[in-house]
Length: 139
Picture 1 (tube, rainbow, N blue to C red):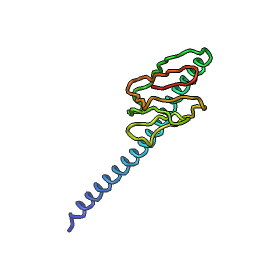
Picture 2 (picture 1 turned 60 degrees about the vertical axis):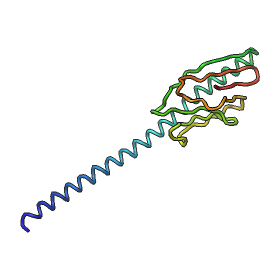
Picture 3 (picture 1 turned 45 degrees about the vertical axis):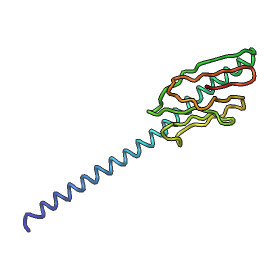
Picture 4 (picture 1 turned 45 degrees about the horizontal axis):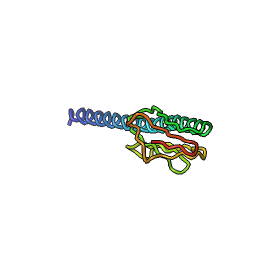
C-alpha cells in the first residue's frame, strides 16, 4: 500500500489535466462559433446594402431617363465559407446562408417595386439588375 498512492495520484492528476483541456477547448469552440455567426450576419448585411444601393440607383436612373437598364453587380461568391441566397419578399431584400437559414439579413427596399426572379445564389459571383421606368428585377 506504500507505493500505490503515487500511482493513484498520477492518474487523478492526468484525469484532471484532460478535463481542463477539454473544458478549455469547448469554451473556445463555443466562442469561435458565436463570433463566426455574428461576423457572417454582418457580412450579409453589408453585401445586401451594396445590392440594395445598386438597385435603387439603377431604378432611379431608369425612371429619370425612361430607358431600360441592365446592370451587373459583382458580389462575393462565399462569405465566411457560406454560399448565400438572395431573394425579395414583399418589400424586403433577403440574404440567407444556404448552410443555415437562421443566419441572414433582411433589408427594406424603401417601397420601390423591386422583385426577384426566384432565388439567386451567390455562387455566380454577380447579380443582374434589370430596370425600366416602372419596375426592377433582380436575377
